Image (cartoon, rainbow, N blue to C red; front, side):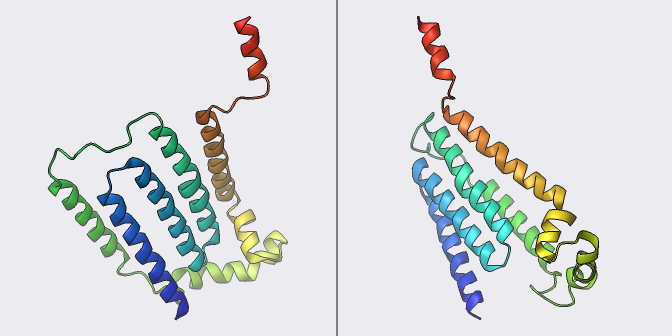
Length: 186
């Protein structure tokens, strides 16, 4: 029962943050609130026992994306221009998309349900065969490192490439770069 309350509180803060983002016109404040939204999403993922997803959301959503948006703000204005078109079409698109997403989740089994497909088809196979297939005693480690090894490698590669891209966009000089500039000036 306590986790449900925590989940609802985190989700409520996420909704309030999203409303604040929609109402603001200061792009710096919007960027900070977007980073806060990602941190709240990461915390929600932790309470739902999806720690690997939470780590990725915190690193990419709150960290790298926020830095990229702040870098973009350095090249543009601070205030959003007033809206010059009607909001009816975007609102209708959001309502239709939201309704389609809700409709798509109506037949899902309850969270943690013992008769869900993942529990009846996949989970048992992992529990029975992990030690023999991989030799790793921890089932979660075996799933992430062996069964889903390419997926984990892909996630790690995305985070690494994003971090390198941010460093390149920030223009952090390399060790040999300053001496070559001095040679060019002379």
